[in-house]
Length: 325
Image (cartoon, rainbow, N blue to C red):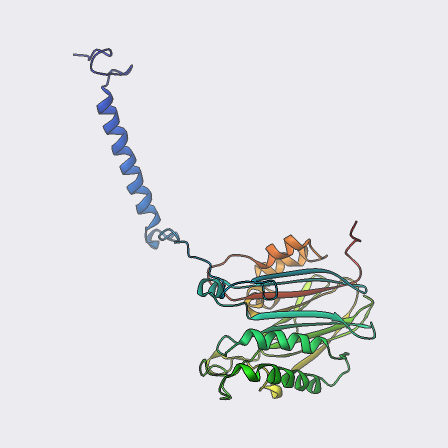
């Protein structure tokens, strides 16, 4: 017997609404269960399991915020005939813990106008007030009268003295081992680059203590200026003010079309010494200075294992930026 569609709240198909509702509801439940099983499926079928949905976490400010110590710093423009892009970003680990950005950068024209002096520092999180050590180090470095032929040991000794004086009042027990505990005094890596300000062909120089990389883009190829020399015990890097004996220095041929990138290891690790997918993509996108927002996006990529602060200071030989209208 066929139900009358006009009786009992039926439909044009001849089925009562309550039956169709049950079928539809059951289908939705089955579909939901199927999707859940797909999300939590193991890798037995050869595909990467999606895992559970990510849980959002609050972004905590480090006791407040002001423009003197921002979570993101971004700069760009010209110094003489050299084009600059710079960005420093507080890493996810520090954002989630409410800790400050511990990287720092500075770039200045030398007093005689002949050189652009750039510096990047990465404060050691295993030491107290590491962000202060990093900030003092880059300011002190770029205030020196640096040239490629300068005795770098004297320059780094001067910076180390400035770091010690500026952070002495912050406390900390000198132990001589940066990774030994939070009672250590402030310490930081430091990488410095000096390039001819006129953008012409000449000699540029870099020097470093610690694991903040320097990379040179020349003729479409990246070169890591200070390749890793092996890990120190407990994976701890050398740092100022104590490790002056571990200074490394290098000169490069500099000229139009070249790019020098100084960075903290939060970004440098992803560059893979110039051989990673990111590095190869930047060969094209950084062949000339990108817009500031594009530069920020290039550095602020999202990968689950890269949660450290990231700082990048990039110098292009020659004039690229146009006048502000």
